[in-house]
Figure 1 (cartoon, rainbow, N blue to C red):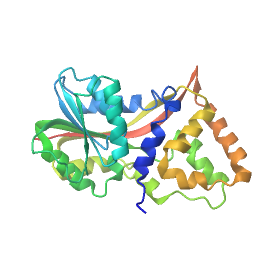
Figure 2: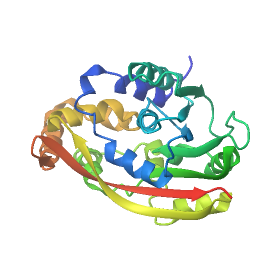
Figure 3: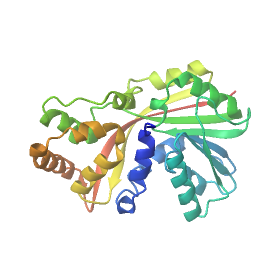
Length: 276
């Protein structure tokens, strides 16, 4: 039996209509930080790596009056949802979906103006090769921007994942989930860009708000559904503790209430560099 990709599972979860409204601005501030570092031009050709289910590719397309986006991802299910959403937003001719491995980008040299990657760079097997590929496809003077998670010890993970680890005896972080935080150490992502040959490299540690337009209970349900790397941890919660865990986590998430929404401060790393 073929092993299912966690990214295909995540795509199916994010495609549920039940989360569309509540999660509409969950990633907006993170995307804004990434695109600010990318410094888009109106006619840019943008390659978005690890494009997932269409963000930030859709947002990028909306900011390019005469440009276009190439959304690259290894997950067929994710790209199917990206293509569907591109049609819904009227971007069908401006977003091209390519299923491929970022370690071997199927584009010719010097073919794009910008490369972006939101919360994907941490999961590539060899980031050096991916950076070299990004540099190869960039036009002279082109720019790449990458966004990664900050430290695990931050409000949202403290309220959710850390709570499960604390309340469930013997619970452990799934090994692959640790990859999320591989660039949390200051300067570590910047070094990867410099080593690949990017110039004028910058790295910023930022705190941005994630906005959830729903209840704490819904946010916890959403987290369990879409965070496929943590599924084994969440599934380890025994039935006799489920109500206690749910209640405690929902209570902690309610502390982020701001008016009619939850506003969760989120620590991220954004690094960018130019091609000579």
